[in-house]
Structures are given as structure tokens and as C-alpha cells.
Length: 156
Image (cartoon, rainbow, N blue to C red; front, side, top):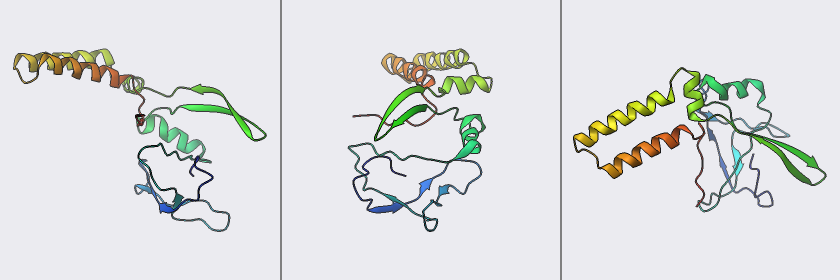
């Protein structure tokens, strides 16, 4: 369900893409007090602001599916305390990074970086990339290993 813009009435309906191995590629069954719905009511999308959806009551099976079964690793977890009409974020547990998940399936990140460095040096020798491009490529590769396994929206 949408977890912000709650004072606005949702104007559009949609389904969600699903990336688990045991689905048909979409989520189209939503709980409703009267009868389950096959479309989710959403707000009009505005590319200049984030739009967040919450997933609730997914259970232990879905949690483990997000772990190493699909090589996505653990998600970030927020522990929130509710008091009357307010809330407080008590703690945040960081999820896995790409490097963590690769290490779990016996890929050594240092070895991967060294292999990329070797390929980059060969490309430099063959003059298929410039020194500036080589540096940027290696830096992006190293930075990517330290990123979350989940998509991250870049704030503008």
C-alpha cells in the first residue's frame, strides 16, 4: 500500500512487478476489507518526488526469499516505535551489500577487482579506452561492490 501522500485520494490502479522465482511476474492480489482486489490503488506518479509503497504481512517465507535464495541478500530493516499519533525510528539495521552476497557464494571481491584491473590494463594497452575511462570504470566497479543488492533511487 502507499505509505505517504495519505491525505490524497489514489487516482490510478496498477499491479506490481514481482521478481521471485515462484511467481508469474506480477503481484495482483491485494487485501481489501470486503473482497480481495486484483489492482492496487495508487497516486499519480510524479518523477520529481519519491513514491514509496509498504509491503506488510509477508511472513517468514518471503523474508527468506529475499535473502540468499535469489541472491538479493538481506534488506535494510527499520525498528519503529509507535506512540499515540507519532513514531520514532529506534534503529536501522543495514542490509547486505553486493560484496557480502558474492562472498556467500564463494566469489572473492579482491580477486574480482584484480581481474577487472587486468582487463582494464589490457584495454589501455590496446587503446580501446582512455586512462580517464579506465579509472572511472575501476572506481565504479569497486563502488558497486559496496552498494546494496537492491535498487536505490538517486535523490536529485
